Image 1 (tube, rainbow, N blue to C red):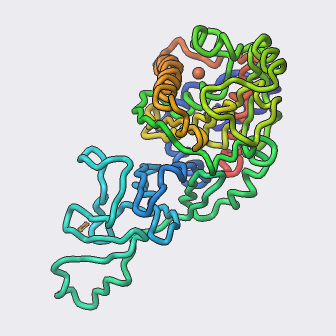
Image 2 (image 1 turned 90 degrees about the vertical axis):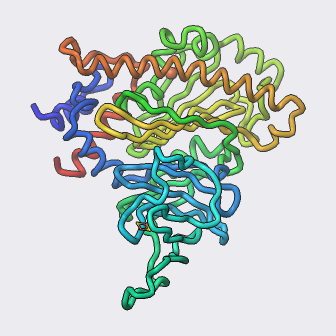
Length: 389
Ligand code: FES
Ligand SMILES: [Fe+2]
């Protein structure tokens, strides 16, 4: 059976009979190429949050599916997703590994090779020693701009330029669930980059299932978000959503007090019932949100190879949090708590990927607490069907 057929067959199983995918889904270079072409170059992919681009010239650098990208806010306040490929001879204007930061502020974008310079909208504004190049008109030259959209404060790109409108695609996620956090108003207050020795789906699956609270997070998350009570919303072609009710005694305390006691201010769109749980969302394929009443962890994972990926982890809070007298100390404590459970996940993901390459691996049966993994398989089967593979 081909890998495509095996994934389609796994996705077609009823949830009660669901199982993990063949190792090829996490190892096979041809399948990774398929994903690059059919997923990462065709779907809306979230790149950063608007608070990371607060001022004109603020930028975030991302490499996605062989495209070196520059997300940058112009003097006109418009956020654009530009190619970093120089219009002279193709140099990456901010190559990684050569001292160019992943985030920062630029007045102009200068190609280090021959010093062609571009303004914040990507227009060529300087090109030395080109006076003898006949017919060369600087004003006709511009870095390539990709189709982009801002949704709930997150900047998305569609490399194909042909994906269905993002608002329509994620309408259900916004209206029913995620919109309560009003994330356009939130601020990224912490971020970290991680180069990962695992396939991107290993992390997405790990992020989306709560079964592993029992083992991986038995000291960090399980004590207040017990695996047993978690439940998943029905499959939607655009997203997965899972609810993680707080431990019963903590719910009772909150009900009694009429409010939740949290480290940061509670997001104002949330009611008391929303404070009785945390929740997890996946905007397919890789937009990952872990939402608490007072903070949201947003992760961006992009493949860098069949068995490697690049991960950005962030935490967003309400802007009012910064006015708290003990803000710095609370932030440091909460960031550390986030890193603690993240490192537990990194160990699981890294060692799971190693298992995929072993002769001892074969698809294993899934718990009902891993329904989101089966939902991701259904998403992948949809992509396979769409591509006619
Ligand atoms: S390649 Fe950029 S200036 Fe020559
Ligand atoms: Fe985890």
